Image (cartoon, rainbow, N blue to C red; front, side, top):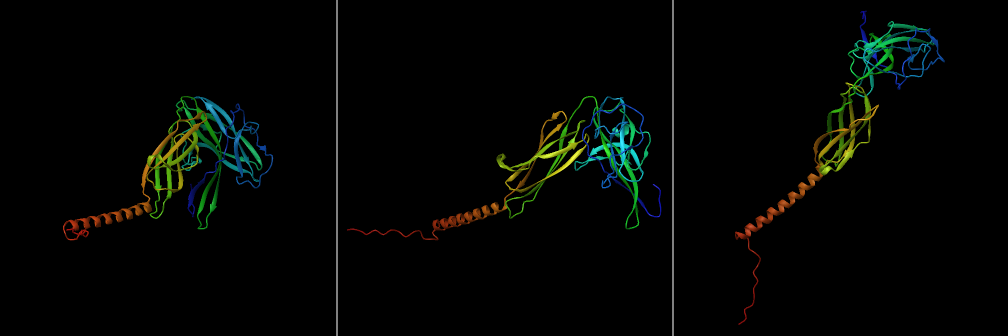
Length: 350
């Protein structure tokens, strides 16, 4: 990036479109001319869009979904629509996806080279200019390498626009705005779904003058297999003898891609401090084929009900003082330091 009098900083904004499962790709053909859009959308937040297409335009798909063998190669089309009143030049490229720590679908930034499906996509060129209010249908090739591992490989086809924005302090920011269509590729071979709970951390606030405090449970779920999955989770707290103290509602687990880890936090208010509190996180994952084996992980913390403990200590202390004073009185009587109860005088009859 060339330098100027002001420092140019690289800021990339990841703007990814939500999509649903599509159909198989069409056969290869030459790209057609830009196609007129049904209507101009002047109020759209995104001034361009990206979607699966064909030589004749979009065919109802919202994502690229394939099941291919190693060394298999296909050609498909991506449609880039210009929703502005001026010609728009976009950079078009593919990259790999991952699950962000908050559960969102994320794509690598432009300066991070893809090692998965994003690197298996080839486009005729890197930059395209789309006339105002038109759509360009652009072919691309997806070639699965011979050493591709079985399972799900997720990525996205991105159309980005770079702009320069001057800040109040005089600095110029180089901003990349991106819109993408998702790529879901499953390479044939053995599928090994594997969900793991990698960590459970419990933070329990136990105020001294309260009969219950807030518990915050933070746990991590990892996808250690080669198939994406989602599912449900629940957090439950039990006290002595397995008595349930608190539990959450069912928690949705967003889609977790292979080699990704998700961090979730659940707050449980007013948990009674019943002594040993065992927090159990249970996860019920499922993939496209159905339910996967459930799993759970426990963590135990100690929390005493301080008002009850204080009341018990006062009662025990009072009983102890009474017992000590009673014992001391008996000892003094036995030593003759204190007179016993007065003797009974009976009259003598002669």
